[in-house]
Length: 245
Image (cartoon, rainbow, N blue to C red; front, side, top):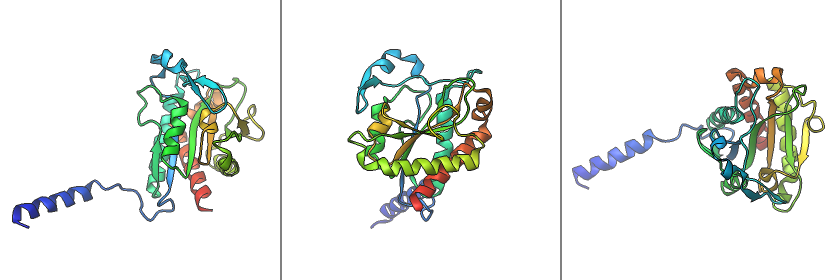
């Protein structure tokens, strides 16, 4: 190898090392793939025809997506879900995991709910979480875990999804201060057969409604940057516990 070729090779090696991911190769989640789906998207409101076209959710036809809800003060659900997702991804990466996203920004439209499920399935995630916040009755408080009902594609992950849901509920109660939902599900767990993300999953997955955006007490937490990081830590704790115990 002449001097020029040697210098070029050395420079390429140096550059490749400089951009290597900073994840903890020996962390507790090393070798694991985690799917994160931050619900909705920040510009969904701009394309109603796209949102309203129908997709197959595994049982029936449903709309591609919605705009999501918002607090009475105007803080939108897509901003909330993306904020929690970014915090969660950073925590998981620090533990050595590879993260698969359904969207990488909050200034786009979509993807549709069936496409989101396919992205995570094709990413071969070991476990996935759909992050949402609810627009429930103003007097209702708290978070709820939505879990899949067997419908064919998801049959093999029903039991593991139920176990994951229990772990998420425990971490959220212990670490966030958000109460269990007073209006949705049974002790914070609701089984749903009408959601593509749950119907079409081939890996353990739950959807979490992190709180009720229409309740003033919940909204005060959901709009807090500090609390959103606390929520992400609870989800990271649950994912780590689920995959390592």
